[in-house]
Length: 284
Image (cartoon, rainbow, N blue to C red; front, side, top):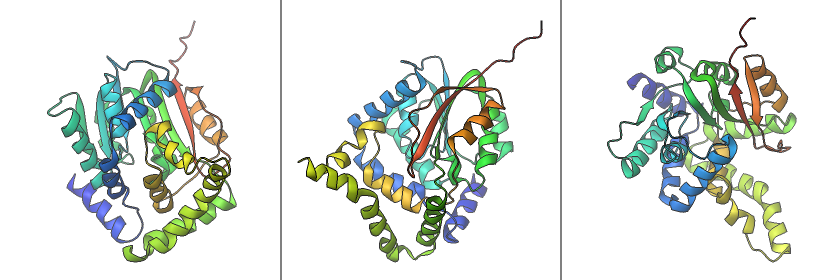
């Protein structure tokens, strides 16, 4: 774990990686039962299971630990890991708060790009990695590395940034600038981006007499914080993107079937995918 911590620290200091965990540590201050219930409901809806009892769940890039907590509350045996030191600490903190000394919830620091770390884990009924693999710096390798973690008949739930072409390349430059700036100057990038991202929804709300309604309702989808997600978006680097069809074809070629995908985004956000690993058809 010390080697992973040192690698993470080196990348942050070089301006090559955003401190996702520092952002999630601030998010935990706003975490409440309503946000947890929303996270639970979103897992149930996307995967199509009311209970995870008797199932194993791995959270790749656990971040705040919210969805690991949601899976544990649904009855799953949970394995969480994150490359980011503060994210690892956040997930440990949630386990301490809600499931102290729980042997059915393992939390580790590790990298999805390290096959030697992943191989001893075996496979899981539900593999979850929301908005993570595109921040590894080697997205397609990360997408490949999660394949053996999914049991036959198991589920893979991922979210990957939408490829917008030129706008995506522009955002990559903005994210690079943000991370290369001294911390006391990052607001010069963050605030203009926040205004750009939110002025239109806020204007629509104002026109309909619902001041900041979209902002206030934001947490109702996945239990997340709108401001923390703005910081995560602007700072989120490394940064890669993919077209939905690219992801679909990638996993189809590896024996997965799509079982759920909400409407594709046309903007800069994530496309969500739930796949199921199809057992091979026996020869007659």
